[in-house]
Length: 217
Image (cartoon, rainbow, N blue to C red):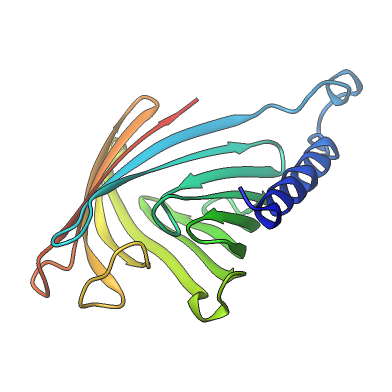
C-alpha cells in the first residue's frame, strides 16, 4: 500500500482511538458506573446488489455505537475494492417525534482514495421512519472524481415486524441511465435480524435489485 494511504489510515485510526478513549459516561450514571466502560451496541449488515449489464457485488458494513461515539467500517460502498473507516458523534433528541443525528468524518482507501465528511440521520414518528446517509468524497488522487453519495429511505411499519416504503440513492459504484435511482422497499424483522429488499428504477430502466441482511448485537 502506498505511503500516503498508510498515513491516511494510521491518522484516522489514531484520531478515532483518542476520541473513543475520551468518550463521556451517561449523565445519570453513579460513581461506580462512571469508572466502568460505557455499554456498546453493534450492527453487522450485508447488502447484495444485482446490477443489470454491470458487475454484481456485495457491500458489508459494520457499526459500533457507544454512549456518544459512532465507529463504522464499509467496503464496496464508495467504489469496488474500496474500504472506508468512519468516526462520528451520536446525538438524539425527542420522544414522540425522535431525531437521531450522527455527523461523521471518514477515510477512504483502495481504488478510490480520499477524505469524506458525511452524516447519518433518522427521524421517527410513531410507525413512520425516515433514514438518510450521505457523504461527499474528496478524491485525493483526482479531484475531478470527487462525488456526493446519498441513500435515503422512508418506511412505514403497520406492525412491528414488517415495513414498506420508498428509497432513493446516488452512487458511483455502478452506472445506470438515471443519476438518482429510486424504487420501492419491503422488509421484515425477527428478534435481532432484519431483511429488506429494494427494487431501483422499475418502469424507468431494467431494475437493480438490492437485498440487505442485518444483525444487531
